[in-house]
Amino acid sequence: MRKKIAAGNWKMNTTVEEGLKLASEVIHMAQDELITDVSVIMAVPFTHLVAVKKLIGSSSNVLLAAQNCHQAASGAFTGEISAEMLKAIGVNCVILGHSERREYYKESFTLLEEKLQAVLQNEMTPIFCCGEKLDVRQSNGQFDLVKEQLAASLFSLSPEDFSKLIIAYEPVWAIGTGVNASDDQAQEMHHFIRKVISQKYGSGIANEVSVLYGGSVKASNAKDLFSCADVDGGLIGGASLDSRGFVDIAKSF
Ligand code: PGA
Image (tube, protein in one colour):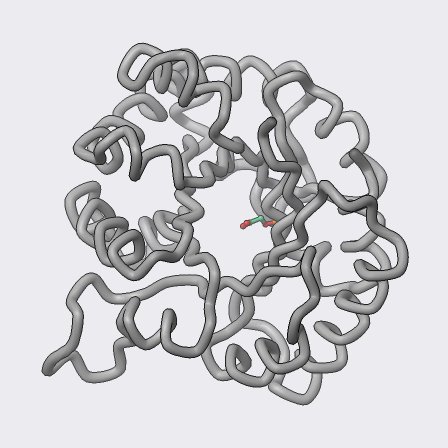
């Protein structure tokens, strides 16, 4: 059975004090209100990780994620954070390949491949993002591009490692715009992603990998998106900064 996941990507938002308030509300609501087979993930800023980990404690349906990491194990990389450092404080997942990092920090397919290896070697779960910009969709190039993003960064992984991933399809034109992909657009791409994975790794693995949709998910559209056959949940930006709205999204399965 594929995991149902609501992952909040806080991006560069909240001070530690604000973040702890938000995280604590989410944790309590998740404990009280969520059915057991839904996992909530909070991808918080680096400065918050240790404190949020303490808050999560032994809560079984809430996981902690970082939003990035460096590919090297250690060394002279001023300002960077390694996967080993994240592992050591109990981080469970790391977002990689978010479109903002591809765009603003020029993260390449090869760099992401190296970061994936670092995260997997440290026994954390990569949340690998893919998705096209508006001009690519307008010229109907989204399928070729997403296939290339998957193949170039992920297909050197062994089947065993590949099966540990979470994938997030995030059309760039839907991120932070308030315009989400339609249910049909999301389902069509998620089905395609599963087909591409199946061609490389077989249908067993393709059917087990959780594929999340991201891009303007909110409580009002989550139910329809999550009811698509190949959509296993969401990667939620703006709407994850409101505890009530975020947990309502997590209750939309
Ligand atoms: P959004 O962001 O929900 O604010 O559109 C999604 C994301 O960037 O992961």
